[in-house]
Length: 304
Image (cartoon, rainbow, N blue to C red):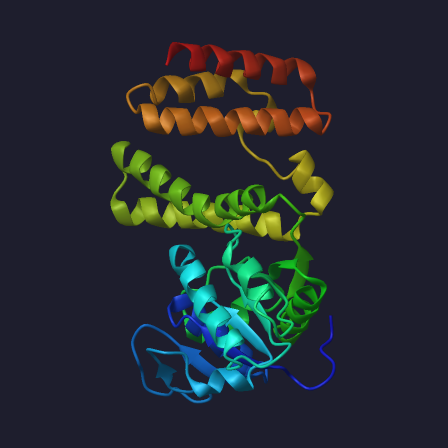
């Protein structure tokens, strides 16, 4: 989506890593960040303003969009502050409030909408890790951003996504927990798998540096396969490599036997191998060998 019209004025409520990163990316995209508010004050980092703290500052009144980037546990408290500001006319009429939580359905949104002033509200959840403000603009370019909420909130979210050169996607109603679980799997679980693989390589006798290098190379190759594969190829598992797509039951059996002394690693291996089998089955691969693999994994699960 190509941005059109003047860039919106944005106030960011929450000056942690995600808030600072989003503020930096928006500023780099030409969006005027009129305020950045956190628990502790901080100096200006042009083009970003100084971080304010305490009561919401007067700069809030100049915002067309308020982006709430606090932790989920603090979200209703932050929305209550904005509701109070709306009642007291310190939040501009018609200003849209977007929160960056991919998991929460905060009750405070309804109270904010009911406060008067026509404040649409919804979600603006970047599907990308945001831990470094200096890399945020590059990370968000061509990323995906989950949106939900009122029509005006969806429009505001799309406008911000366009400024960031990101892709907006609407989160289906009632599916936020499932959506967020999928996001966690894609963003965090590769790190977990890297840790498990390094531990297994270390247990096999590889030096830590070699184990880390090997795991990094393997994950980079897998990420490259995912990046270049079509959606259909991903869904059918045609980019999978290793013993499962070959129908190599004997190798999988040896793996399970080798992992018998490490039940956590064995459980991870068995669960993900089962998913690989079912993915290939759904894609129409060799049913006989996959059925043998499924039976082997089922038997291994029964022995735990």
